[in-house]
Amino acid sequence: MRTWLGACRGALAFLTRLPVGHREGDWETFRSRPATFPLVGLVVGALAAIPLLAADVLAAPTVALGYLLAVYVVVGIHNLDGVADLGDALVVHGDLERRREVLKDTTTGVGALLAVSLTVAGLALGALGVAELPPVTAVGGAIAAEVGARLGLAAMACFGTASHEGMGSQLTEATASGQFIAPAVFVLGAAVLLWPHPAALAVPGALVGVALPWLWARRNLGGVSGDVFGAATEIGRVVGLHAGVIAWTLS
Image 1 (cartoon, rainbow, N blue to C red):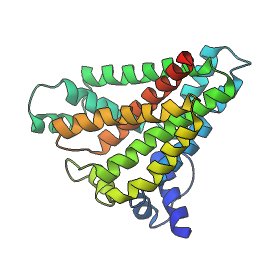
Image 2: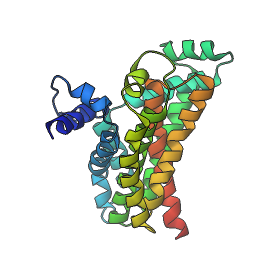
Image 3: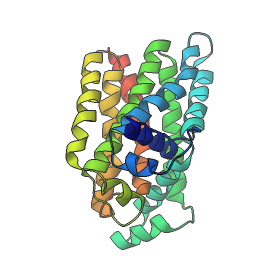
């Protein structure tokens, strides 16, 4: 039990801005237990979704802004750095080594600006759509998008290959493929039971969002990195939110 508490504390300390403290060994226990990823998604989703409870009282744009601010208060903006770096690598002309060089370059290019702008705009528009849903439905969809995105990160840690030594390899080398089974069964099983609630599609939607940068990185960068993990978190959340809104619209 203490080991799992340490893993959860390490996960929250690494993946969020929450003041959970840090103890020796937390990082090691976290990175070897990918099941903590969706648990963090549950915490992040619940906290970030608090403004959505005011959907019946405040105007949708105001609620959406509250949600957007809450997301970045809870998780910080470091994941957007990964979006920016992948944006520059996406538009650069050159081979695999050239793209890796761009990832390490601290200069912000037009690809980075466009990628971050589209990601934040996508989140804002998804938040606006969610804010127009009944409060309980909106909260469920937002939580599901976070949990689904973090389940995708767990899959990346368990099945991904790092492109080089760094944060990506720290996460991928400490896990085994079999460790993905338990969190996947639990999260996807819960999504099936929630049908036809929009959250049921927000989870697989978020997984698709995570898969996009993961597959691109595997082909064009030779594997995943810390930047890919960060970008996948952001893109997974956006796609998950929109999937939930689409499910509600079509129901």
